[in-house]
Each structure stands twice: as C-alpha cells, then as structure tokens.
Length: 169
Length: 283
Image (cartoon, rainbow over all chains, first blue to last red; front, side):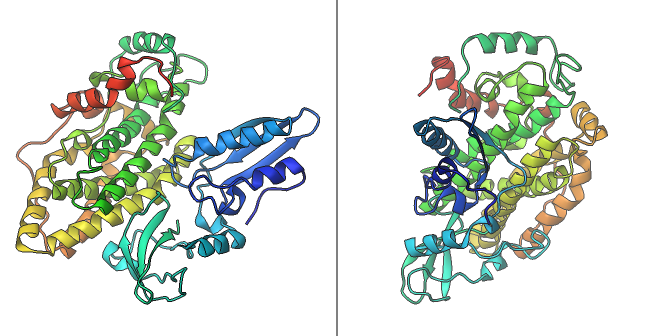
C-alpha cells in the first residue's frame, strides 16, 4: 500500500530512502512514509513519517536522511512524526515483502485479529512462518524478540538455519 | 533524548513546579493551550519511563542473551511511550518543558509513577511477575485510552496497545514455563507472585488527577480496569499451575502524589546523573 503520490524527482528520492536498520527495504515499501507534500514554488517539502514501534531508534536517522535528500535538491524539509493511525505491517508493499524474503527475513503474515481475548501466549506460536531460505513451513520460534524491536528469531527445522521474522502487528 | 534543552529551561520549570504540589492538577488554566489533565498524563508517562529504566538493568544480567534482547526491546517500547507523552505534557501544563526536563531534571517528589515500577528488580521470576501484572494493566489501560477525547493520548495509546499485548504474551510465556516447570522454578515463580502483591492495589487507586481526567473523558478511572486486569493475570496463573495469592498485609500508596519508596532515589540517581553532571550536553 502506498499513500505517497510520487510526482516529482524529490518525492521519488525520499520514497527510495532505505530503512536504516533493514536497508534492503525503502521507507515507502515499509509503509512508514505516510505523506510527501512538495511545494515547488516555495522549494519546501513537508514529509510525514510514522514509527514502527514507539521507541524505534531509527526515526531520527530517517528524518535527518530526508532533510539531507531534500537539501541536496535545494528544498527545505519539514519532517513530522505521526502516531495515529498506528503503523501496521499490512502497510508493507509486496515489493518490500519480497525484498525482505530475498534478504533472509521472513516477511510479516496477516495481522492477527481478535487479539487479547484468546488463550495465553503459549499457544500463540501456531502461526505458520515460511523459511526465507529453503521455503519450508516447518519452523519454530527461538526467541520472542530479535535483533530489532520489529523482529523475532526463528529456526527452520528443514534446513536448520536460524532466521529473523518480521512480526505482524 | 538528544534534543537537550539549554540551561534556561530547567530553572523556569523548577520555579513553575515549586508553586504547586503534585497530585493536584498543576497550572490549571494558566498559559494558552493549557489543559488541566497534565498531571494524569505524567502518571502514565512516568510509569513507562521508570519501568523502562528498571527493565534496562537486565541487559547483560538476564538468564540468557535472548532475554537481554527481549527485556531491552520491551524497555525501548516503554521509553518510546513516555517520549510520546512528555513533550505533549510540556505543551499543556503551561511550562513548555521538553522530554529531558521531565526525565532527567525532575526530583523524586515530582515523579508520579506507582511504586510497582520503581522496585528493585529481584530475580528473573520477580521480574516476570511484575511484567505480567504491569503489561496486563497496560493492555486494559491503553484499550480504554484509544477512545480518549484527547487525540494525542488516543494516538499514543493506539500505538502502545500493539506493543504491550506482545509484552503480555512474553511475560505469560515465562510465567507458564516457570510455574509449570521444575519444582524449583515453580516455587520461585509462586514466591514472585507474592513479592509483587503489595504493589498492585496502587495501580487501581483514584487520585484527584485521574478523577479529573476521567471526567473530561481524556483518561480512565483506574478502578474500572481492575477486574479485567485480574482476569487476564488469573488465566495465566492458572495455566502455570500457580496460585494467585489474595490480600497483602500491607500495600504501597502515594506514588501518584510523588511519595516514593526507598529504591526510587537510587534509580533516579543512576538514570539522571549524566544529564545533571553535564547540563545541556549534546552528542
């Protein structure tokens, strides 16, 4: 899903900025770039981004990269952080999901619904995650949290390789 | 917290704070844009901030490296939730303070968090008992706050809700694993449920700030969350073959009014000493 109207070279450049923690995916494909509003007359650009997680430490790096890209093309950027509506992995583009998979990170599945009323966590790990390396669906969770806030750690029981899973939220 | 304020701001905020005691709505109707529920939001933000600091202590101290990562990530979520509120609180309490003013330059009497989050970390079972209760509380709290009349509060809550559900899952997994584990892990998990008990009632206490915020439909009356939180915890405790202890011979109180327990002072000293030793420093 993209909400960004890519109408100018600047908007294009901003949408292609890679995520600092998962550089194989752009901020547009990740779904955290919510709006780019270029004012050609005033040479300004208003950019709206949203964090994946409240404490995502990459937000400042992303904002400064946007300011840098805009500055390179002679624009002053105003970067706004927006919390609502809250980011969901459903906003990740198909291209972004494929880029993650090729990089060895299992892309997020559908966001679970009816959360919070069901059984406790022990039974939650029944969702199927496909190994990004060999394609087997026989995988198990090693750890609830991975190398960044947005990932969990899994292992493939077929090829025995460990891999990151992008958590669906 | 990189946008550190210069030395002028703290003195202005300190004098603003001296004029009113915590626990009541500070600076009611003062500056333009001032809203009377800043103290309520400070309670929410301070719970998250202080617990983030405590959870951060587990980095390199958890029983396995995956738990260093897990508790560090949970702390980061909570830190983010606090950061989502502090600058907004500064814009509505009439002081214009920034996040560092609140986190790094406030003295103990000005913190509005409950005693539960400031307690020393104990063993891993103690932490899982605390995380189970606190995240169950946060799930119910943020579910209610997504309907807040204040859009910023609703936005922070909507974001936080996704995170705290995962924290609750994580704590539930461990409580079940330890409770339904070996004789030793069962005994220690049961003891942990008892250790945390005296600090739970305070989560559901009313004070002037929460009543006011609830009246304005910005906040939620803490007591209304009680039954749902207990039900969530009870389900996990039962699955863990543990027993939910009832009643404590004493209970904590006063955190929302700035009255804290002994561990709070050293927590703040550790958390704040760099910012206070090098005022205005940036990197």
